[in-house]
Image (cartoon, rainbow, N blue to C red; front, side):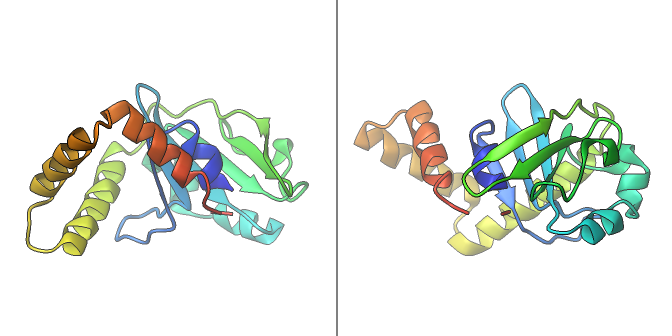
Length: 168
């Protein structure tokens, strides 16, 4: 549900990837001109309380995400429980309800975000084989151009397809 909600705002959304980084977000996305958005999914109150003990929570400057949200079933986390500037999303059976908007951490760990993205790109490189990733991407652009799909159309189509997925 978090991926679907975030895909409406961000052109790139990644979820449930473990890396060597200090923080491995449940969902993270990047929006043009708006920075990064991180979502931490919590199924229980105990899970939320444990999350607060992480070093990246105790020192927000070391964490990822310009805007940060907790996503949980209703009543697991209350607005009064949130760290400063964090937003809260409640998941009902059919929708994500914004209980509080995130206010933003401009002094976040951009290096951690770049390392996370680099790890994802390395994985993509491994999946496509020995061909350089940039060459593969150029080939995809040429293929789409031949089909008459513009980059903006392609991005919108990808968002619509991605929003069909499932609580990460």
